Each structure stands twice: as C-alpha cells, then as structure tokens.
Image 1 (cartoon, rainbow, N blue to C red):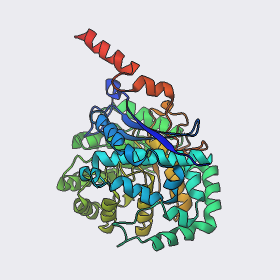
Image 2: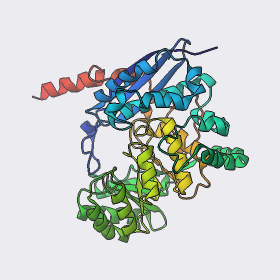
Image 3: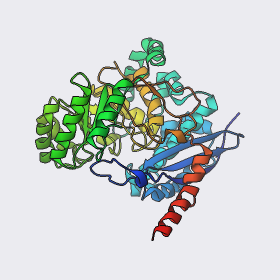
Image 4: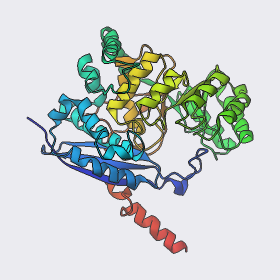
Length: 441
C-alpha cells in the first residue's frame, strides 16, 4: 500500500534558554535553543514524518520559511517514489533551479533541506516499523549507496569505492550490531565546561561526570587566554591524567592566534582543539593542524556541505571529522561524509550540542560503526544533557555510552505539549515571558 505525502507543516519552536543561562561559549553568548520543526503529513492515518533543523534563536523564522519554500518539491509525492531514487530526491531539493540561488547547498536553505530530508527518513523508518539506524544497517550495499549524490565527490570517492567500503564490513556487521546493543557507543560530555561556570561548579560537574562513567570531557575556550589556562588547569586536575580533555574555541581565533594559544594550552595534554578558526578556512585549519601536532584539530559543526569536508580531508586539515546532522543536508549527505572520512582514514566524532542533535546522532553513530568504520578507536560522540525531556524517545546514555535506539523512526518526534508551549511567539511560555517583561518595565 503506497503512502502519499499530503502536507508539509513547519513550526518555529524556541526554548528561552538565554533567560537562565549560566554558561556559554566564546561566540554564542545568549542562545535561545531553537528548531525549525517539520511535519510531513500523509494519507495514512497516524503516520507522519518529523524532522528539525537547529538554530539558536533569531533567524529561526528564516529556516521555517525556507522549509515552506521546499514544500512544493515534496507534497504530493509518494514515499515509494522517493525511496526508489533517494539520491535523485535529495538532488531535486538541493538543485531547484531558483531556490539553489540562495545556497547553493549552504546557509538557511541547506538547514531547511536538512529538516525536510530528515523528516522524510523518519517517515520511511516509521513506515517500516524500525529505528532509522536499523533501516540503514539492513539495506544492501547497493541500496545504501543509492541514497548518496556523488556529484562533486567522484574525484576522491566513487560509487564503486563506496560499495567496496560497505562490502568490506558485511561479514562483521552482525557482530558489530551485537556489540552496540551490549556496550553502546562511547560518548563525551560538554556539560562541565561552559564559559561562565565557577571553578567549584566545574569541579563538582567533573566529579559527577567521573562517577557516571565519563572518560572524555570537553571545555569551551576562546574568550580570554588567561581564563582558559586557569579553567583548563581546574578540569585537568579534577579528571586526572588518564582521562581525555578536549577544547572548543567555537571559531573565535585567527589562524596565528589559534596556533599561539594552543601552544600555551598544550601543557594540559588536550586531545583536540575544536573549531579553532573560521569553519570555511580549509587552508587555515591545515596550517593550525601542522603547527600544533600531535594535538588534533576537530571541526564540522558549521561545515556547510560535503564539498568543504572533502577539502578539509584532502588538505589533512582535520584529525577528527565532526559531522552535524542539521548543518549538512540531512541523512543523505551525512552518509556521503561518513564514507569520505572512511576513505581518508579520519574518525567521525559527531557534534551534538543543540535541540534534538543527540537524538539524531544516536542513530548516525550506529550506522557509522556497524556499516562503515573500521574500528571504534578514536571515535566518540558528543552528549549534552539538556532539553531531552521534550522528545517522545530521547537519546539515552549509560556509563558514558549512547544506548541503541529502539523506537521506530529517527527519534526526533517532539511531545505535542512541548510544541504547543514553545512555539514562537504564540506559545504559552513565550506569552508568559512577554508578560513578565512588560510587568518589569
């Protein structure tokens, strides 16, 4: 029985996190964690596809409008016609002869593409009654590769090379899946390291993290070097020499500044520096990577598409590939980057700080290890402990490991009460915030 998409609804969902923020990063000091939230309605009662793209407040309405602009390419299609040629569907959304002008494959229009594409995959998995990761793991290598648009990649990754990677892991696929079900996927925590936290709060959060089984801790840097040095000393002392410490500058530094600052911070034995400079500066990242080795460079949170990732990998500019499930154009492009990283021998360590990103990443890491990665060595995925309560099937971690998702779909369906309360500007939470501000004048 066919499933036809009958409507695309996009909603502006914002959480006023800046109201009670006591920690931030060097660039984004007052985030209201937000989502352009897409629902694909169908002619099948009770069957919908949900997807979102993450922003931090102002501008979320632009993503909502962009999602609505893509609706004409989706509404009226059958799910079967999409999944029969998923790469073609993805290219149709990213190559519309007029909409692509406001990209192409970057910025607001690409963020919107991610929301729509992810909602389509959610619909596909729900129609099969399986979690998204399981759907992708059980596809044949040929079906898996058919979802990927190899345009602009074929100089370094061809369809045949992708098939070779997937076929190499076929004999061990069942064992890998069993390993994930038994052990989970290693994660790291950012929750102890936000700028603005007191030293005592940092120590307390580190102690709690160690007790919960975390072995990888990331802290924000970039606002002030002397403060970074002091905070790094606090964390390194609290977690001891045997655990991993990572730094994240959130694009704050120039290239020379990044090199100089990391030479100072090197005394704390960091595993990586994340986003040391502009996310578009491929050669800048390469220069930093060469100058600060053996400390690794990690980036990708705001890497706009697979082509920039290709160049970062070609230039030996990153030692850790940080895919973002919403910055890239949804599942199809993520799969391409996972295979690119495997081709270059670079481990994938996804970014997951934001609304719903842990829920998304929970599926993607399973796919990467079971289908693509040669080993778990040097692989770890971010986990941030906020806003999970708004999802019907939130990501779960235990002893510093992501647990395997079990619910059908992509795990991103929000609770109806949360959607109603946090819709901007008419939701209850936003009406109450406006009333408080008026009363305070």
